[in-house]
Length: 134
Image (cartoon, rainbow, N blue to C red):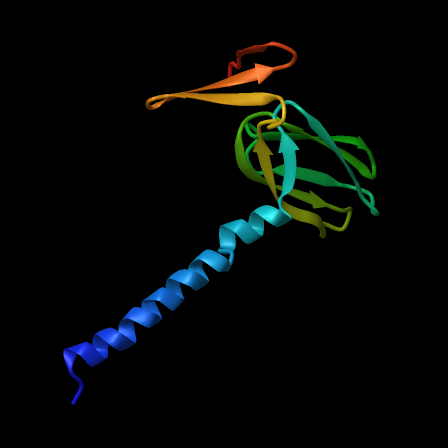
């Protein structure tokens, strides 16, 4: 029947192929991060809509805040690091927006310093100072 060397010679290339595919193909988390609404910590983002808003729901209000500016404009503010969701309903209760919100740190003005297992984030605008995180 099948010898041990035949099974090994078949399984090794299949394992290598599976490893290559897992590296090359994005997983569900990577694909969903591309579709997320991205907001930087302590910054606001304006969301313009084509229909009037009736209700705005933020999954975790500690991560992001949404304010209705006018009937078709929402201001989304990043309050803390993390991921939550944003649901915006029109007057009929139909979801206009149902998206993930990713709040992250402004990367071009910060620096991360690692000392063994400790990490410190520095805000460098204009001089680098430790950043106090919520």
